[in-house]
Length: 262
Length: 257
Ligand SMILES: Nc1ncnc2c1ncn2[C@@H]1O[C@H](COP(=O)(O)OP(=O)(O)OP(=O)(O)O)[C@@H](O)[C@H]1O
Ligand SMILES: [Mg+2]
Image 1 (cartoon, chains in turn yellow, red):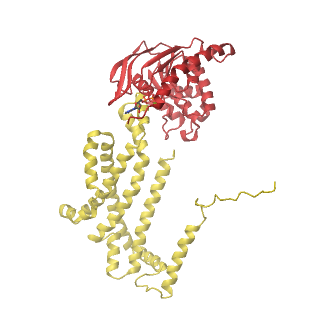
Image 2 (image 1 turned 90 degrees about the vertical axis):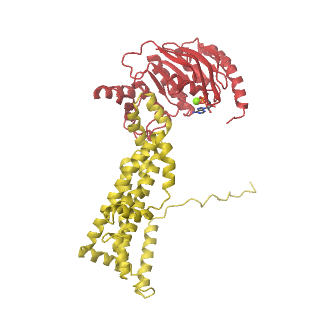
Image 3 (image 1 turned 120 degrees about the vertical axis):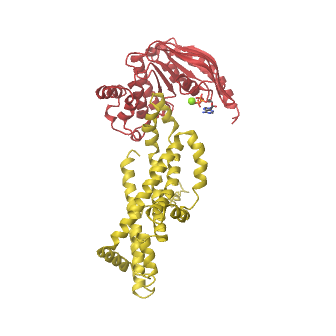
């Protein structure tokens, strides 16, 4: 054929290709720039200490032993508040998921109370429960409760109706339908809710500790700020981030184990 | 066991879906139900198995269930309805676990059902690892495991591709011929109906009424033989004639919802 041309390729782009190590390199470059800027006096170390200084401060705190006291008090509040809020949230979410009256009463109530920033209730909770641990734990529990309720009942809602009908058609009693169909079917949604509730718990923990606590990572960060000890301040922030990272990793492991079928 | 519908009717709110269905499925019979989309076939099957409460009429079973039957009226679902978090064997076991069975008896029943449906090597697989045909085999195995007296099937093959459908239909026919369980088989596919059923019930468009019941005189085992080709072709023609008119009208209907 005389008039012969190749068909030009025009289908490229618009589909992300994984680039190896890009994330790690980007992270390292950012840290290196930061370190460089501080060491060469581009920013004052008083306002922004170098990453190495922050890590060193964390090491000092560790050897001094004060770190553990702050961390342990924080962990008690975090775990106590999260477990309390989660247990109550699961129970309420279950009631709203499977029980029509529970839903009729619960859904409007939850929608109305969910938007209240729970930290704003801390002063009230302090009046009720005192300045001690109870008011902080209650704040965290409240903050965890609402997203857990919502995650639980929407997860139950999302369980395919046909699976429930199938179980009924084989004569499974209601208790078994709940245990073998509804709960395992809702588990992915409930676990996804844990991700949200743990991050909320962490935020509330730090805020509550900044408002009124002697010990705890939040209190430590606040005190360091008051004393202009920015390296210790950032060490505290780093610690909180590591805590959040650890929780996230733990949840990923939990999902891997429990949701292997996906 | 026989299944009897007495002037069964159903309305979803104002939507009249079924009207005056009087029908007896004889012991050991396979009755196919065909009809246009939305004429209430699934609703009828749901009423037959006690999953949908009819707004008119009643359904009865007559006669004893076979010995060892754990769930006299049992479904096979169009979308398989398998639990994705359970393995094949465990999905089959779900139908048995709530009965007071010895662990060995339960395991033997599961094994037997898996063997009959050719799923032995797949017992530890999860549904997402299986093809559509294999998944429906699990659905069939689960139904066989409870030794049903009446089998209700709602378009069990319609989610499968044409070749898988043909293969599974042959296997299913062999299973059915061995057990001759009273069955109701809902389908859009006249070929399936003509291959499996003793009688074929044609429903009208919504509200579904019985338009015609066609008996297939040729025994299932002989239907694929060349000698039966002519009789089967005539039946197919007759059936298509009955279904076509309803399908045309249903097709031209404007959705009212
Ligand atoms: N739960 C429900 N609530 C309200 N309307 C429904 C409900 N289930 C089905 N319908 C309607 O009732 C009619 C009959 O539904 P049904 O599923 O029984 O029909 P079908 O013959 O099985 O249809 P198809 O061939 O598409 O499977 C349809 O118009 C459908 O939209
Ligand atoms: Mg249907």
